[in-house]
Image 1: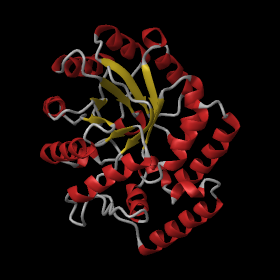
Image 2 (image 1 turned 90 degrees about the vertical axis):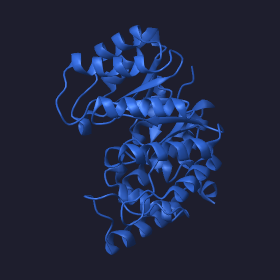
Image 3 (image 1 turned 180 degrees about the horizontal axis):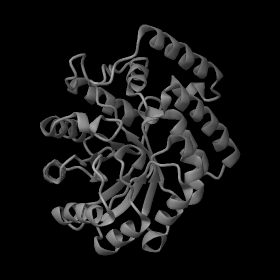
Length: 304
């Protein structure tokens, strides 16, 4: 089965000032990322403002990315929703439009125990063909529920189409436990951009990166250098990546991603309310910080 690897970009969802999805800019963003050489696309996750979009919007976003990509790159659609009913609607839609696979965040906001979380993922796994790949997604600091390694091991043992996990919390002990699943053949990706290189060193297959939606170049370079065994150079680039991660607030405020995309020729537009767009002062500081970062970047030619 197909799996995520390398630089998997968590995509921003471009919107206008009314909070309506800008599908034309979404097409342009998809082309931009493919042209930059990212390995996989991951729309409609946290970076894509997933829970702020209704089911119809999420379906159209998924269709736009899949149809634009035209199988030039793997597209894993995030389908996790607030209810299992909506999740299963999005599961079946992703299969029907030809997505490579899907990702699903844990149940969110309302507390869920291990039994409930396992049952949730069982329902998803049983809804799709056995050869259609599913990634678990754990981001406990936002979702409020964590995926224990024990639950992951049971899910992997009972459902061959559950092929991996995206783990977006900086806990290397839990990451190590995930890596041991299915006799060390379970696919694990970090969702923490700043931990990309150390996660690779631990045995992860790659990163699901929001910052790479704006600046994919340093992340591609880290993966290339690590794959070539050039660790010192990879560490240097990771430090550059860490600087832009801080400038863009690491995804904690998606307005920074969307304004950053504007500087690259893509109209990311507004964030959907209740979050607010950047103030004029914040925009000015962001532009100055990005320009300063680019001047210091040893890989500046990659940004041309």
